[in-house]
Length: 181
Picture (cartoon, rainbow, N blue to C red):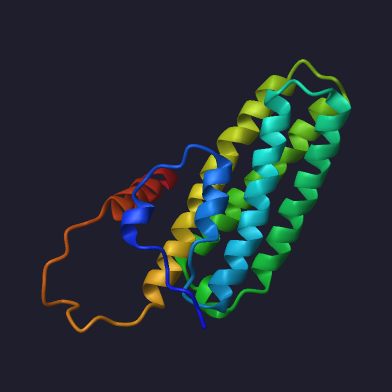
């Protein structure tokens, strides 16, 4: 039996950490595809959270480098998972935008990993770029999930009868769309 999506009131709060996103992703889903995508994305979000936390605690460079290598592998696996999703996902505009964001994130992870391995003075800048792209990528993923679940949800008997006031979540989606232009 599929769990119901989290109510919009739950979506209206802002995320303060990558871990918050991971917890949100486990809360509710509309169908099996959503569940699998949420699980894959949750694993990526946990890896991002653990890696950024390790970097911020000032751990040694080798430990951070190993963790970044694991993150790169997780991002690769997540991207491979995306290719196997059904046509309903691939038909969404947000799917292509998310795939582009994920590729950019993978590039940023690779650049950060190289900076760590070379003990480059650019490591800090590479980390900041990675973190910025991680937030953007996860935001695009949440938008994709919301659009898929919205489009594939049960039709309402009242749709079109009452004017709908845009929610904060819809406002956030519109903001992400403007950002991509």
